[in-house]
Image (cartoon, rainbow, N blue to C red; front, side, top):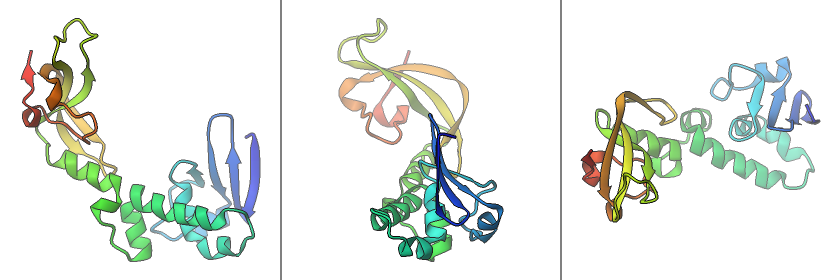
Length: 183
């Protein structure tokens, strides 16, 4: 551990050379509302810290720390986006798909279960990709987890598609939807 700062009794913000987050005492972990409580006392710095800030928002508002109001708003935004079920269960506010990337990603992959989707794409710098085409590697979607990550089955499949038809900004590109030709 490189640094540790106790922001509330039993709540430490910690950082290491590679990562960080919040660590809770046993009492604070027990005080976490069921909808927000994770199994362990570690709440990583990218997303899970937001659950702790929601749980103890009233106490955090009383702190005179610079940026706390912005941090609390960010905690709401992150939890709504990445933990929509937990956020809704805790706040009583249903999260719409437009407010949650996780929900949009899950819906996008659920819509293509059983189809082959792009898992990697290549430009004409690859010898097997001719001019005007995008080379694709894909796999069949078997299922989708609660965070919207696809589980695949079957072998990798190669295909080509007209470069103009492939949009890397889409959450998912199914071979069928973009007219990919197996090679």
